[in-house]
Image (cartoon, protein in one colour):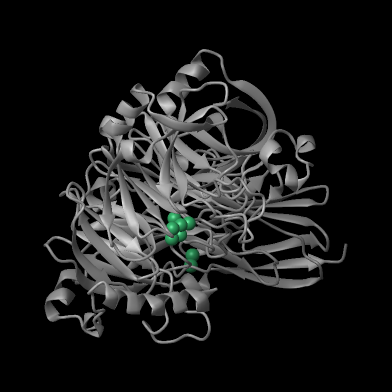
Length: 640
Ligand code: CUK
Ligand code: CUA
């Protein structure tokens, strides 16, 4: 796969010449001026938080911009031995699904919460592609606090995209699937057109607390839904989805897919859909999905299985869904900061089509349609088109905005970024990327208020950019200065996992709102200890509960006897510290689990079933004081 892409990139170099752009090796030589622009002096903070998806590692990483420094890696759809996430009893329910415990996924897109189309940065949302889920991360604790599974979905790629006040997070299915409960799903794959649907989920987000709930699902035609953006400002109330395989083929082996020279952008009037739901037009569909929530008071997650979802059928309600023809296999669809322009990016197209929201409304008003799909109108390309960006490069994927009237589109095949004027559609600048760029990210770029200073290109191919590390190389990101007329490459930095999308926002939004520690008096964990005198061991049948305290620089109890082979041993460890940045860890020899890393004021539980007799040392893993190394103990296991 990578080889092929590399070849495409090679072709692209030739193509780039044809377009009159000479990729310059000189771009690799950073001038002193560029270095000073990304230099964050020791002790100084970055200007922006950058939340970066981890792709196939299922995590998010947090980086500072402009330095590119990694500040944190946080588990979302993954276990994380580093802090026991997915290993401790408290966190396991976060990774529960209707299929049971699914400790991995493929996280492509980040959405940072907004109010009035501007970042408020209360939460970061991320999608699980493989076993469809949406996660919400609290940006005061940088912890995953909620995960909701998406039923009637397969390949949850077109998500999570949010409306301008974070009213909804949407999740569009990449694979159309048979919908309904498990018993309805055993159908022939060749009955695709009749039995499969391309479901779009509208997940409501509570204004105050962020709690998610599937408000309703829309049963769209069996296309593949790739990406989406909400309308904003004048187009608030609408959502736009890119689609491919509008041939509705159940196999994409050449002959079937990409036959047509246009696919569609699907425009959804979600305010209208809301009205239909309020009027009782939704029907209840039996399904099974998990809803997992973290409770900051008990420091424990719970998982609930839900069995019903409300569904709207746009085949019956004819004024919710409209199709805009868009040249070949659109990938990204993006809306500009004013909400007027909708940009399609046909991967196999030689132009970038820009649609006008005003024209779309006028065409709907006049019923200027060229046909319909199951009764849902298809608009005429020309009547919705604002214009086309001519000869932008090859393989347009994703577009971001600087808030100064310019759009920046990544060109996967020709490995470059093209800057163009949204009104005049004129290409004003282009720069090479190393290599094969995927998403672009400008701080505030997808919102109504981009900050327009920097742009990061997340590249798919690395090749020679860093010191080589065997067959697997770090993915490469590149930071550009976009404050002037010409884009200027400032910095290369390696990333964690395979980033797809990322969103950055001003650090000032959240840096003074961070949780520094948990107050012990507010800890309602069922096994919390409020002081060292409560430390103890309790046996209940074959279950042994060790109530353990940690505080600089000892564990209590630190000599534990009376454990038998085959016992279920639970270490309930409370970190009694009440200060910032003093976690304690717990590791036990031979335990087939991860460590615990417990934050000040928090309680966490590790389960271990010893399989042999002996004396097992345990110790603190986080260097917490001068006597850290002395923070240790013994546990004795005797025959059953
Ligand atoms: S996708 Cu990866 S480069 Cu999953 Cu947003 Cu376009
Ligand atoms: Cu506690 Cu080291």
